[in-house]
Length: 447
Ligand SMILES: Cc1cc2nc3c(=O)[nH]c(=O)nc-3n(C[C@H](O)[C@H](O)[C@H](O)COP(=O)(O)OP(=O)(O)OC[C@H]3O[C@@H](n4cnc5c(N)ncnc54)[C@H](O)[C@@H]3O)c2cc1C
Image (cartoon, rainbow, N blue to C red):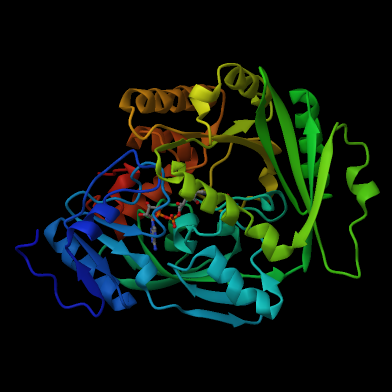
């Protein structure tokens, strides 16, 4: 590839060992695939130049955000990686909208909007992910039961198609492209700019951790508070406890003094045992992973393989599948720093056509987030196999994936996952990014 000279770009072209090595791996640290070169675009024009160059030569191209994918989703072996974090910061609040460069991290979006008293309605648990990196998978968090996914808050996108055309799309203009990009795994174009709708930001967050010894009681309370919507944020964790498990319902009420959350009303009729409560600033709550990240980096396991799996289960099957999975999970299956999340979302809040969940009133995000070994490939392969088995079981019982996983998905798996909306994605991919060259790490190919 490098015998052919890439036309001049205003940004940087990197071919050194360090840059190729970084762009050849991701946070999952399970798939390694070095590109031929890395481009750090300085503008949307640079992105278009690279995509046209690559399309003409049949070269794979991957856009890279924060590189926090678990299984090579943002890699392009022998091709070109576009480092989207190099786009010049563009962060402008106008009324209740914010326009940002696609490589902005959610923390940077908040740092832009909070001084205006505004916030995106839904944030991921971790704020160092890029806006575009999450919008191509959906973007889910504890506020999803109220406001849907992060994709549901998008008003407009600037996209460079796989053939290098720069287009602006929204629900009213070029809706076919808009709908194929949000939750579309980066298969139709590279997002360069995003306009998001904002809501008023609260000043503070009061967070309850409510502990249960019984899985059915925990599920019943989670289901109840998500359906009645009494909290602003609801998630949950399954915590190893001796030979068994404890279940933690994590619920948050946002508020701005002098108003105060009504604790008695919020906790009314819930059957938890122990509880903890803490009160922080709104940003302090949203940025709660920062200290944990620093500790895991210092201790080293942040850099270990991560066999993360996120599946959506139906309301009918959640209890059985979770109980079976927990019965077969010990420290060996989870890793010392692994964790398991479980929380419901309301399906009627989910409006993004490609965001696929099981049918019913609610779906349950079940996420065994395993940490593997830095030096035991057999163990790592076994953890991956556990993901394959759980995915198969979930799917046989009506489940779906949340599409950011350490899982060897095939085109057939994607076809089954997207179901009725698959033809729209496949047609848009063939039209906007023909040749299966764009973001090939998602392992989704069309004729
Ligand atoms: C610690 C941690 C916590 C997480 N918490 C949450 C959470 O709470 N909620 C949630 O929903 N997800 C969560 N995730 C998953 C995360 O949202 C996805 O893995 C996301 O895709 C990663 O974003 P990124 O910026 O790192 O993108 P990358 O890993 O760099 O890229 C992801 C995919 O997007 C493509 N892509 C990147 N930029 C662009 C672009 N500009 N245009 C088109 N395609 C592009 C890439 O090619 C790749 O296919 C978490 C992940 C981690 C590691």
